[in-house]
Image (cartoon, rainbow, N blue to C red):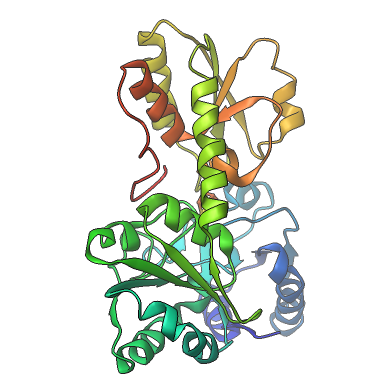
Length: 335
Ligand code: SF4
């Protein structure tokens, strides 16, 4: 495994805070490592450590309820980062860095990248340290490279599955994007949000991947759902209960707009948005609008009910007004 976790940072925090109970959480791929770290810390500092084995999809997936219920003094959230607000309601974010090198795959991609006058470069949190060395490498081969500024929670050149500030804001200045990493989920999001050709450089498989076919598929799926919702009368707005995903204001805002259009609207709350739970209300709700994670209903999951995300409902409002919605995903953020 080439993942590096800064355990020292956790230890410093524990020494400063002297917590009695610490809760660890991590995405699936790092869960075992989180469990090992928690055990190590428990033995060394004589504190109670708990490990959450619930799914943890992003920096948005924080454990606010568990903090209170389990009476923990600190949550160590491994594997996702926030550039600002590093302590977020008792939560310490610890990045996981992947130390795999990109030189080989960058070298293989040179002839392809050289076809473009200027490229935008970006990545996801675990490869952020590779961004500047990769830019230098490409520039040493006479390729013009632009890295967009971060915003809010994001570092320069970083994207999330739903936040694209660093790429969207430079899209008109570059001819294509290159994303470092193995996640085609992020590459597809990048291409959908910017509308620019995107190449994903996968250092493990040593592959240069054009994601355009997947992008097209995701776009069609998201677009068709909006069209299918056109004549719906009864809407159910879902508020996600995960602290980083909860958006009550937005949900109420959408509710008001729908009611102004003469629609029947109910608000429902849930932590994990599962199809079988939604099915329980299917008889009374034609379309669900989930305000939690936009990717769930854009291209992440398959539902037996019609489920829209925030950019999709915004597009539906436009559609009702007879406006063009083809670019509904071209945005800095899908929240
Ligand atoms: S795409 Fe979904 S899981 Fe990922 S950061 Fe955004 S809201 Fe969270």
